[in-house]
Structure formats: structure tokens, C-alpha cells
Image 1 (tube, rainbow, N blue to C red):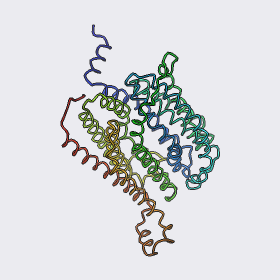
Image 2 (cartoon, rainbow, N blue to C red):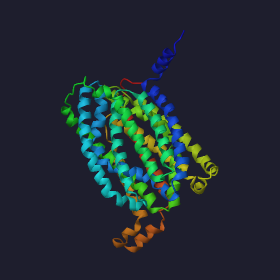
Image 3 (tube, rainbow, N blue to C red):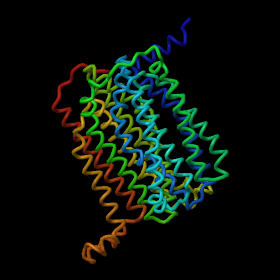
Image 4 (tube, helix red, strand yellow):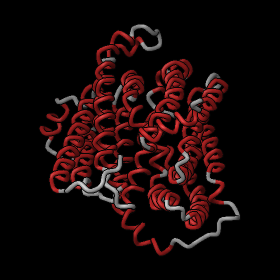
Length: 455
């Protein structure tokens, strides 16, 4: 009699580690996606007023931006905790985790102070006012960093099953918190639920890496790797800093420069537009550690990259096309969505923007796992040009003091401070970055031979 375990083992062996765990995560994550769709498109709009709805995305991004310096400091730890875990060097991982805990302990007070002192700057532009929200955002920032570190250790241990279970359980837990708190205060309830979910993930992930921090594991110094760690970190500072700053500016401009109905419409459209990301969301968790480990053992992984990019981009593109064709009708079927129906056509453009960003993320994740950063020479100028253009042409009044009034009047005549123009800028820059990836990949593929493949 054939056992289920034998069948499972044969399928896993045939698919390979990447596709087996990606498929498993794809299935488990869809449960979480269904809950998130209910939260984002039904539950939150029911209790968060329209005038505050557009502030949710930029406030979430502000939390990440405030923790950016600490995230950069922890970047080499995140990478090498995964690397050492994969190599079985648990003593070095334990030493790194101890140092991370010390850094986080001191940084928590600094993050709290920075968030409190800068809150008025952000809150005034986002049209919100809540001192309690300051401390909730600080907690989200710190717990997100802890999650990132422990996630690296779990990836190195190949404990993808626990990662999938955690994703579903944390979303369910967040839903329960939202049901309890949203009727009391929509804005605070939304972010309190995010903090509670992060705390649950931290607890589960720390339990998952208990073998790395147990007394049986003796700490081993990793200081001999400092030069190697810094060489990896320096270019990563540019990537992380520019990406985080760019997204923060994008969301701030939408909230500050557009009417409340348009910023709320962007929230709705962007929630639907993230659906094509689900393919890469499942593969990405497994992709980086597997490529990183294969690179360290000098195995060729180019075939994996081609397959992942093809599935993520083509599959996501089909979903984006379907969204673009159906959303105008779909928005008219639910009462709380109907005010945003005039902007429903933007879902397709935002969905394709996300598809191109996924392709870009796939390629850059591959290059970073292989410790290559040559893509920075075109990523940095594109990101800088996008932010500069949006800031200048949506805040043109600033230039009346410094430029001839005729120039500023011409900038004003373009009327860039409209949701359709801003979405068009996102689409063009995402497409340009993805096309540069393809050129980069083509040139590398042409220049290199093909050693042993990992499938």
C-alpha cells in the first residue's frame, strides 16, 4: 500500500525545494489573502471615515521610514544570520542574535523619541492627530525589525512550514483584534491590530529558532566576517534607503496634495492592484535563501531566475489584465465602493505597475543573494528622478521664490497633482526599471557560460 508520505516525498523530490515550498506557501497565503481582502475592502472602510482612509498607507510607510536607520544597521545581521544558519554555524548565529537583541534594546528608546518628535511634521501633512498613535507606530517599527531578523534565521533553517502557519495565524489574530477595536476607534484600531499581529509573529518566530538560542549551543565569534558584512551592507544602504524614501514620498504626496476622495480612491485601487503580487509573495520567501545558499556553494542558478521571473511576471500580468477589465463593473456592485467607481480604471494601471515592480524585485533579489549590486547604477537615477519629478510638479508653488514665474506657471499648467497623472508616473518608472533589468539580464547571459544547473 502506497503511503501518503511516500507520494509527498516523490512530489517534493520532483518539484525541488523551491517550487515545493513556494506551492505550499502559495496555498496557505491565499487563506490569509482572503482575510486581508475582507479587512481592507469591507471591514476597514466600514469603520474608518473617508477623510482618514487615505492616511492609512502613508502612516504605515512612515513607521517603516522612521526605523530605516536601524534597519540599515541590522542589514548585515539579517543576511548573515540566514547564511550561517544554512551552513549549520549555529554558534555564530547565536552570537549575532545576542548582539541584535542589545542593539534593539537601546534603539527602541531612540525610535520612540524620534517618532514622538517628528509626529507633528507627518501628522500635519497627513491630516491626522493622535498622540497614542505615535507609540503604536513606534511599536510597529520595532516589531517589524525583530520579525525581519528572526525570519532570516528561519529561512536559513528551511523552516518554511512554520513561516506559512505563522502567516495565516497572524492574519486571523489581527482580524479578531480589528473586530474588537475598529468600532471604538477606526484609525487606532487599524494600527493596534497591526502591532498585535507583529507581536504574535515575533513570539512564534522566536519559538521557531529556539534551537539556535538554547544553552546547548555555544556562542562563536563572527567578528572575522565584519569586512565581508560591510561590503554587503554599503550598497544595500542605497537600495533600502532610496526605496523606503521613494515610497514614503509617493504616499505623502498622494495624501497631502490630492483631495480626500482621491487619496481614499488610491487606497481602494491599490488594495485590488496588489492581487498580482500573490505569486511572488509565495516564491519570494523561499527564493532568496535558496539562491543565496546555492551561490555560496558555487552552483549555477540562472535557470531558476528565468523560471521565477516568467511565472511571476506572466502570471501576474494575466491577473492584472483581468482586474483592469472587470474593476469598473465590480466597484459598482458594493455600496461602500461605489463612490470610487470613477477611479476604478486605475486598478489595471496600478496592477501592471506592481507586476513590473515584482519583476524588478525578482531580479534584484537574485543579484543581492549572489552579492552583486551592479543594478544600482540605473535603479538609483530612476528612483531619484521619480521622486524629484513628483515633488517639483505637485508642489510647484515652492519655486515662485526661486524661478521665473513663467516657468512655475508652466509647471502648474501641466496639472500633475491629479491621481491619474501620479499613477502614470508610477507606471512609467516601474516599466523603465523592469526593462533595464531585462537588458542587464540579457547582457550578463550573453557574457557568461553555463556551469552546473540547480533545478
